[in-house]
Image (tube, rainbow, N blue to C red; front, side, top):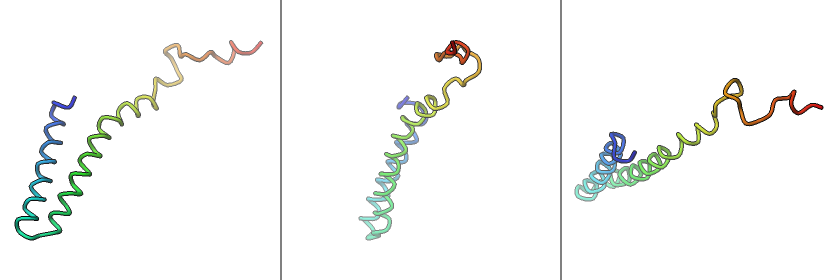
Length: 80
């Protein structure tokens, strides 16, 4: 999953962020350096979310309550 197209774009974003830090230091632009550091942090948070959120959404959505023979017994089966 990390070697696909999305992994490429995460790598590009990190490289651009590092370029902003270097350019900010080289040309004495502190705001560019700050934006570069913030960009790296945002990219890492996005990469973590990219790995975690699909599983989280899948577990929350489940297969629904209709069809499929769910794991919980029906209301009729529990009444006696």
